[in-house]
Image 1 (cartoon, rainbow over the protein chains, first blue to last red):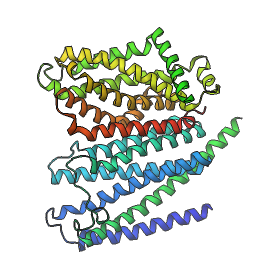
Image 2: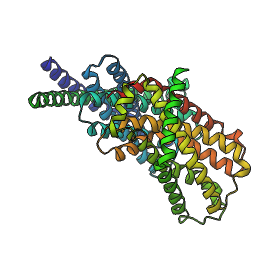
Image 3: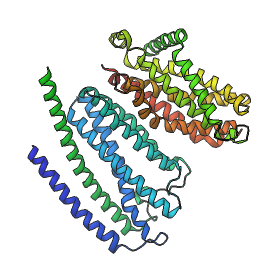
Image 4: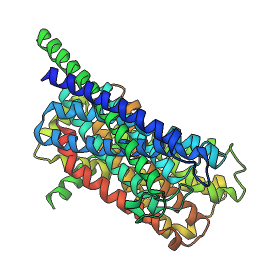
Length: 230
Length: 225
């Protein structure tokens, strides 16, 4: 089982490297500049997929948390914690790239726009989740409270997701064709956006599996330590 | 129905203890007033800005003062194993959390009323004529904050660094509620029509319903000791 997982991690890392190399070549050397933003628009290929990976990760963690609460299997808890950790990183990448893009396009590093604020709130919520896990020693209590906090946090993620449509703000509206019906983004550029989303998803999956392996090992060491002290 | 009866019994118990000891109310009320005093140094308190920023000052002071109330909610049950006794009783987890939320709600409303009176005097803001709309906004926002306080008071009651972990976890979750409450309070204090602020009312109602439902469903999971 462990050998299979090792092979899977290596295969995913290899696939991610090939996909990223192909995408970077196309993003920087093949695709033309955007008419209004010029060279700078290319940050969208990292900014938007990082947000998607983060969002999907938070919802995947919520699903795993529900599964943990339903069955009590610690594997779901380890996987949920690993996914949240990776998703926090990707959401931070989204915030940082958005900030750089905002500096170039709007002339400011940050604006208290509802979408930006909500994404920051999301990152802070799940950073609190990671801190809370460190503050609880007992594995069952840690898993149970983490699962409940993930579900509460995801309620906030829904507000983040919908806020772009609920509120007036500086952040651009949806541009992807499945949300707008098309016409907002060149099909070749949109295709590359999806390809880089795929690449970042594979990177995130590989990182999650590495992290989940560490979580499982930590749990095993912890149970051995407890057994030794009984 | 049983849940509501049980919840009100828990709330009545907590409020009776609070009335006798006044440990949370005195601390939270004083803290809120100190924060309002400190904010008065950041701009001219008698300018028109008081109406524009009033909502922000008030809700930030309520949020900070609220943490003191929420920390005591479940921590009050720790001495003499009272929490274990409550959990072993026929009381459902949901009733216990709802009862704590009702007690938080009542205590926060008292703190808010006192702060509002002090705010009106310190900042020369005439809010009495708008008290009907303010009551609606305060009731909706305070319930959301109170239910979060009850849930995360239960979360953190057995944690190391309880007093530090509660604000770290609760404030990010509270932000949508706080933004909506601040925008609505500013609109009411500036005498703007609330018809243009309906999206914020929707945020408050959605948050109240969402957090209450989650608290009800997850209460037993959070409270298992």
